[in-house]
Amino acid sequence: MDFFQALSEYNFMRYALIGGLLASVACGIVGSFVVVKRISYLAGGVAHSIIGGVGTAYFLGFSPMLGAIAAAVAFSVILGWVSLRLREYEDTVISALWSMGMALGILFLSKTPGFNMDLMHFLFGSILVIGDGDLSLILALDLLVVVVILLFYKQFVAVSFDEEFARLRGVNVERFYLLFLILVGLTVVLFIKIVGVILVIALLTLPAAISGHYVRSLNKMMVLAVLFGMVFTASGLFVSYVYDFPPGSTIVVLAGVTYLVSLTFCGLLRQTPIR
Image 1 (tube, helix red, strand yellow):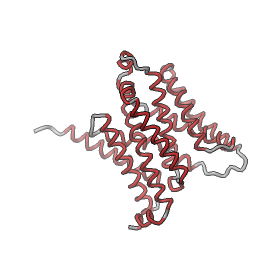
Image 2 (cartoon, rainbow, N blue to C red):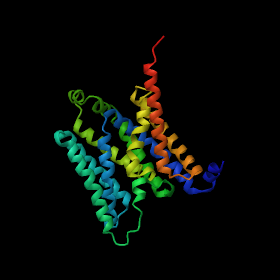
Image 3 (cartoon, helix red, strand yellow):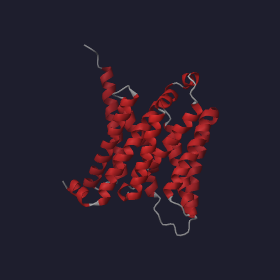
Image 4 (cartoon, helix red, strand yellow):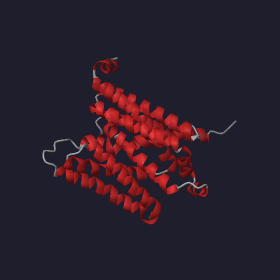
């Protein structure tokens, strides 16, 4: 009851809940494609590279979120091109860009005059400090992701499941693959405030992975992943409030435990003989 009273009394609690629920929409949709395509390593590279954009933005006096968005788009294009053109060196290049992005971010932050922000907010999230501007940005990016997916759903499905077949059907695989990675990068930016760069890949992939245990249709998987993301966000806020835990970490722990329980349950179910 104290939690619900806090929601009614404090704006920051309501903003945290609304922000988490809104971000779960794009995360569930894009995360489903990430899981199906099995490109979590690429999404991880984009996520950690964003620190470079954040640090550069602070150094130049711009909004850190704008820097994060610019870095997400830039690194998505670079990593997508590497994945498509240089598969032999893919892992090495991704590791280089991943580490270089984080290192550049820390370097620029250390040279920013008067810099006093705790970098831990970007590494592990700060959902309780979401404001009106953050909600507007999350909603705008949410709508962008939903509209693009609706417009090019068939092309994204074709690219995700069978690139060669997509090429035979006349789909520009490179263009849509890069567009999809840009959406991944923007979705990662959505969750920087909620769980941070370090934990964002877990929340991007786990709801979709759990959904994949129970449905085989991609559109049903996306709907279920959105619902799981909302449940994890709301329940994580509740548990963190009751037990005074960090909200972002609590959300991810709940998602991880649910995934392991679901994986174990489905594994046991498959081993049960049919009578």
